Image (cartoon, rainbow, N blue to C red; front, top):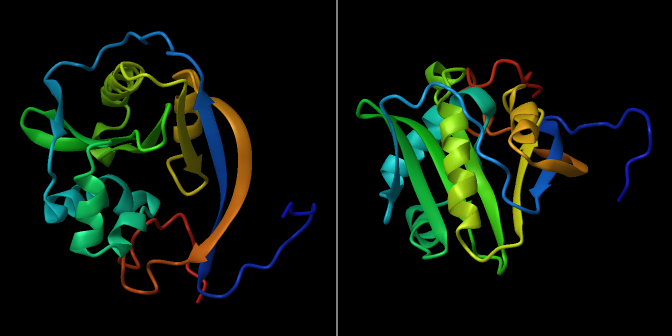
Length: 199
């Protein structure tokens, strides 16, 4: 349903975000830049659910209200993470886990950049550019014709511009309304202070 111009009520206990869907139809050129020193991107073949949740929270939960994977129990999460067409990567700098990247090839001929993010201390250091260069290389090494990602207004304000500079093109915008994960205890009420809690 297409929303009409104007104000639209959001139910109590919920949050709303504008979601932008972006696509890349051919491999974008590698973007050069400093910041790769000490970085390594490693594929984790069978991620432990507890390890994955901890990194997911550090990268996206505390600052940007990532919560979708936190709704899953161990079996449901393992079913995704252990799927041969779901590739989970960790970005490490000097032995520390500082980034999460997930490439989802479950749709034939396409790859979704399902999750992509850094811990707050790594933002602006060049680590994101390094990881995105690797994401593009790894995605297009497969027989795909579409690489796609989405971001929303609860994500880092730098995210949308970063994806566009990396070669993705916006193709669709939607409004998403979901229960606030901070009110259910899934995330602490201190998470994402830029998003108001309305009980």
